Length: 314
Image 1 (spheres, rainbow, N blue to C red):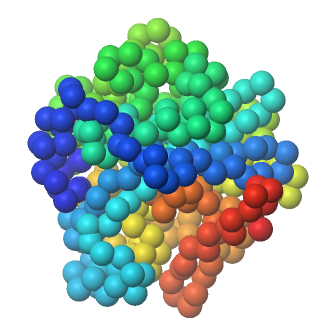
Image 2 (cartoon, rainbow, N blue to C red; image 1 turned 135 degrees about the vertical axis):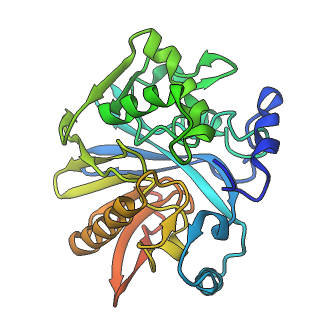
């Protein structure tokens, strides 16, 4: 992901072959909570430093510094890489897989240790829902050329899979070259016919459905979990740096495939979440990334769910 991080991208990828997972033993790697009848577990894959000035491009760059300072955040921001596990009857459904070894030894790669700490093994995962194919979302599928989740079926929007299949033959699309490893780790599952695609907004399982939010990538998908009066949306990359983007969803993002469309989708998502009051789970909001969006004048703010030993979401 070119220029995304404090460290040169070549440094990150030179570390791939000798990488180990980022050590997060001094912090909790999972957090359980309830969404109606579903048990959901937030899982930490670790963090990665992100330079807001290299990722986001407002008309006035000083706006970034102002917003970060107001949130007491120093740049580069240590940005969470989150994934989520849904327990649904006999199914264990994982939403995104973190970065695996694709960020090297110092960033990410802690998903499996967090999963095990939560009481599960990778072999138990039955289904994986990919919001999109980028290194920090599909990267954890394969490590050292071995499938991490050998018994899982991968679900991804057909437009997303078609786009990345086509990118094997070209480097023309912005951000595509650096994310090719994210598609490469999916290919062993494709070759073994473990990947299922969907189109449009559909129900995948009882209580689990899809919403198209194209823009960040051609098939970027939000997943919806509903049970009783509770509703949770898994946002994927609708947000990277909340302190900046909730105040400026229109700000250009360096890794949006369609920057104009992605900005419209962010504005739509933030406004709808604020109006409806449902829960969101965001891959890059500080772990566990669970909360609600509140409108505050012409901007938005994130309100984290209160910590609960009972797993309450309010």
